[in-house]
Length: 504
Image 1: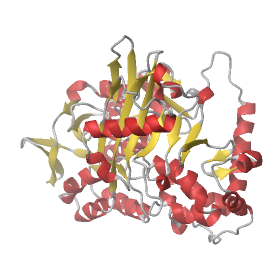
Image 2: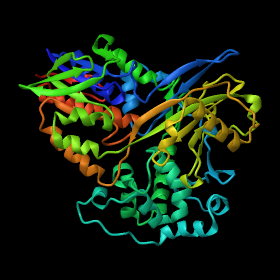
Image 3: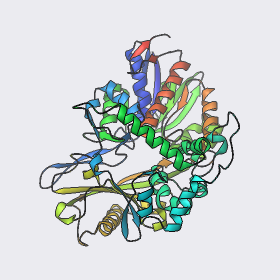
Image 4: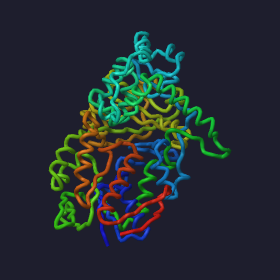
C-alpha cells in the first residue's frame, strides 16, 4: 500500500486528499493521511453558526464567504460530494457596491466592468470621479497600445504592475477610486507591486486584442448578454449569480471533503516540523517528534509556512518560496438590531480606497448579500481590516478591532453613535494572503520545474496560480496527480470526477 501524506488541511490540501481518496476508491493501492496543525479543517474557510440571544441564529463566515460561478471546480466537487443542492446564489436583487469618497458613500456606476466604464450616461453623471478624471478615462479609446507583442509572446512577457497599467490606460482616478479597492482588494495587494500577468492577465491581453480596455469590456458585455439570451433560465431553476455560497456557509465544503477522505485519515492539532527524503521514501516529522513514513508528500500550506519545510527538500525552492510575501488581515463580523440600521439595505458591499486612509478595507452586508444569514430583526455586517499597508492594525486586541470596525461602520452608514452590536467576533488571518508581485510567474515556473524533478513530492495552495477557492482545489488536484504518477498510479477521471481507468 502506497501512502501519501498531505501537509495542510485547507481547501488545497483537501483537494489533493480527496483526489487521492477517489483513486483509492477506484481500486488503486494507495492511502492518504492529512496532517493539519489547527483543530479543524478548512483553512481560510471558516463558518460559525452563532445563536442570537433573542432566538434564531447567524451564519457567520470568518474567511471567504463565496466562490465564483465562472470556475467549475467547486460545483464539480460539490456534485461528487452530494452537496450541490446546498449551493445558493447571492441575492442579486440587492447587488450594489458602494465606494467611500470622503464622508459620502457613492454607488459604483452602472456599466463599470472591473474598473472600465462601458456606459456613457452613468459615467457622466456619477460623483465618484471628477470631470478631468472622466475625460482621462475616455482617452483609453484613443491611447495606443504600449507595444505590440511578438508572435508567441504572452502577458508574462510584458508584465507590469496594476498601478502602472491602469494609470497608463485610464488615469490616476480610475486606479485610486475603483481599480485599487475592487481589483487589488481581491488579493489584498498593493497596486504598486502587484503583478498583472499573475493576477489579471486578461487585462494585458485585452489591450493587445482591442487596443482599448473600454472596447474590450464592451465586447465582453455583449457576449455575456448574448449568452443569457441563448440560455434563458428554466422554470424552477436556481437563478444564476456570479457569486455563490452554501446554505450553512463555506465551511460546508471542507467538512464534506473531510468526511469523504475519512476521519481516520486526518490528524488535527499536530504541526509538521520536518520533512526529509531518505533512500527513496519520505519521513514527515511531527511536533512531538513522531516520524511518519510516506511514499509521497503534498505540501499544501501558506508560503511562509512552506519555507522551513522546503529547506530540507531543495534549498532553491526554499529561496523562491521566501520571495513570495504574505499579508495579514482580520475579518470582524457583527450584528446590530434592525432599529439601529436606518439605512437602505439594498447593497452587498462597501469598498474603501486606500487614498481614504481609513482602517477598514471593506464592509459586507452579509444579511442582504445572502439569504437566511440572520434573524429578521437583525442586520449582519462584516468589516475587513489590514491589507499590505495596514499590517500593524491586525496586531490590536480583539476588543480594539471590534471597536474600530464598529466605529467605522456606524459612521459610514449614519447609524446612532451609541449603536452597539448584538454580537461581534474577530477572525485573524496571519500571513494568509500571498502577494503576487512582479516576477511571480517566473518564480512559480521555476518552483514547478524543480518539484517536477523530485520523485513523490508536490506543492499546492494559493501561493502559486490563484487565490480563489476553485484555484486552490485545482492546485491540490494537480499536486495529487503528480505524486500519484510518480508512484506509478495513473488515475484519470471523467468530468464528474468518477475514476475511468486503472493502472499501476
